[in-house]
Length: 171
Ligand code: AR6
Image 1: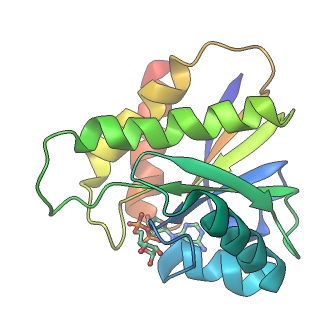
Image 2: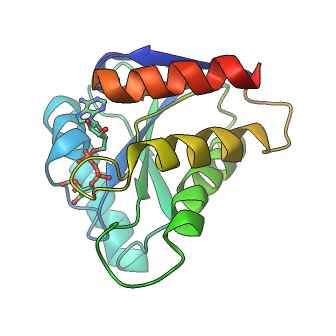
Image 3: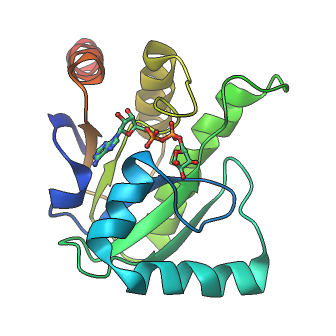
């Protein structure tokens, strides 16, 4: 499995699946979630509504999969990250679960290439360096032989530099 960092807008990345940093409602919001729903179109929201109707809200650490609508990817995995400034001591585990559950869904759906945004490091204010370490370590320790490439798509330069550096060290 090849791991790489890319500084880009995740809605433009051509992979089998892009991951969204969603919220528990699954019904859209700001940040990368807003960008994905805006560019992906109504089909994604419709699919999210159906999931909501059957399973209710999506808890932090969990993930669901939908069509990617008009995006170049085939699917979108909506993962709900933890909010940094709230009670509860298991935020690190919940962030790791976002990556684990997304990878599990990718395996179930025969996905070979997956792109992650830096979940929870925007509106949810998770410290960027800690989030990058958790993301990379979780993905690296995931045992499988189906997924060929994992791209960490960083929007801001600070995150890109962190991922680029950490991935160099781990090689
Ligand atoms: N492509 C890639 N990364 C992006 C993009 C983009 N187009 N836009 C922003 N980012 P955030 P969170 C980066 O705030 O912290 C929403 O309202 C951004 O720079 O999108 O998990 C949801 O509905 C940051 O590094 O997600 C939730 O309510 C990263 O994506 C809440 O925000 C995550 O930032 C989730 O907050």
